[in-house]
Amino acid sequence: IDFGSAAYIKSGPFDVFVGTIDYAAPEVLAGRPYRGKEQDVWALGILLYTIVYKENPFYSIDEIMDHDLRVPYIMSEESIDLIRLMLNRDVEQRATISQ
Image (cartoon, rainbow, N blue to C red; front, side, top):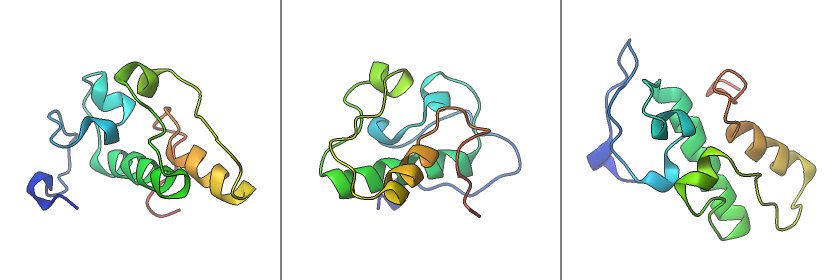
């Protein structure tokens, strides 16, 4: 955990990203204002994928923006469903912290 790039949750959207690009959500990479919790869910989805498959799900910004999720093998349907929900490029369809 890199607490050096931590930020307080604020009421409005963020417009500057501080962190590792590999964990940045598509809306962040597109330069759009973003909400912290949705970005956090995306980053946790990247982390969960990396723990399960021992590799990154995406290897470039282009892949993050528009590439099918690589599934080397199915650990369980529930685990891949959760990862897919967390890595949904549509912010409104992405898993939430409360889920």
